[in-house]
Amino acid sequence: MDDSLLLPDVSDESFMRLALREARKALAAEEVPIGAVMVHDGKVISRAWNQVETLKDATAHAEMLCLTAAQSAVGDWRLDGCTLYVTKEPCPMCAGAIVHCRPSRVVFGCSDPKAGAAGGWINLLQSNPPLNHACEITSGILAEECLFMIQTFFREAREKKKENPRREYRFEEGE
Amino acid sequence: MDDSLLLPDVSDESFMRLALREARKALAAEEVPIGAVMVHDGKVISRAWNQVETLKDATAHAEMLCLTAAQSAVGDWRLDGCTLYVTKEPCPMCAGAIVHCRPSRVVFGCSDPKAGAAGGWINLLQSNPPLNHACEITSGILAEECLFMIQTFFREAREKKKENPRREYRFEEGE
Image 1: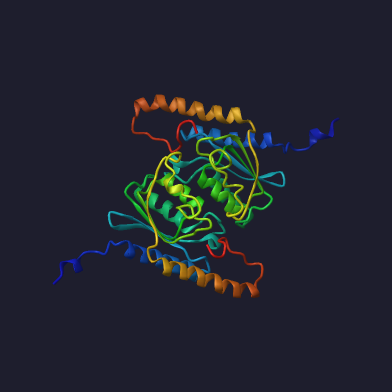
Image 2: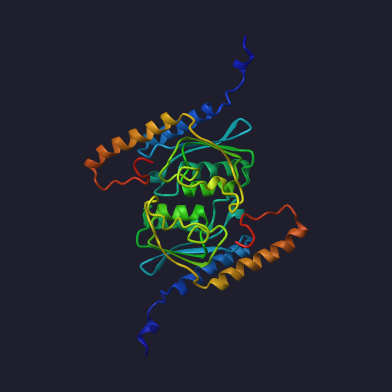
């Protein structure tokens, strides 16, 4: 028997699948489907999905909630050695928060060339200096699945908007 | 009698004094002394002080807590028509969060030419586009008092650090 079958799958793809599972929770709640997990020593220490509408809080992006939960899990704001997996490139707020919390790596699915802050529009994760931390970045992990989920959401949202024109989503279409 | 004496003081200075009062609460808790208040129609709807160490959460800047509390107060993530007063120029995380929540104005005390994101280093509050909101900015309100409090904190922190070298603060000295 191949011993590798007994080992846990700690590949970037396997953790991005868990982030996608979080994104599906957002989708079920009619939120823009973005999910995140934080990993330390090959183990998930926090997971979260975008809850802007659910919490009526425009700062409740998946990354923010995942960072806060990870800090609770380790009992410290320093997330050295951790890797954040998120289905979409972080926005400036989330990238700024990531730098404050200092995970070692950020792995994301689809890019956001328009307003992303991990290289798409600007790169706050690797500005060091002036920001006092830099993260290793890996992009494009399961990018098509991550993007497809977001695109599908906005296509359906356009249809629903015909029924309820006042509904507005916190992410720009196409992000 | 001068009728103006009966009117509430809705000047930028008066609200910045309230933000400074919040900053003093941070100081009393041995946090970097930064405070914020959110104002709508001349009334304070939320107030907060930096609680990074207290909450063990590197994202718990005064602005973030003030935005979240303001959203709770109005029952919506949209803060149109609101003005955020904060004693120091917002960092990229906070500026990104402000843009998501859409207050109309941001008024700050001292600038952060090194890493500020309201014109000091970059300007995320007026990037529109690509970010989908822009705020009016007023800077320099009670700047000396705001800066003096932060500088005093760091001077005292240097002395305390001699006693406890492991203590580290989430803001860079001189910010």
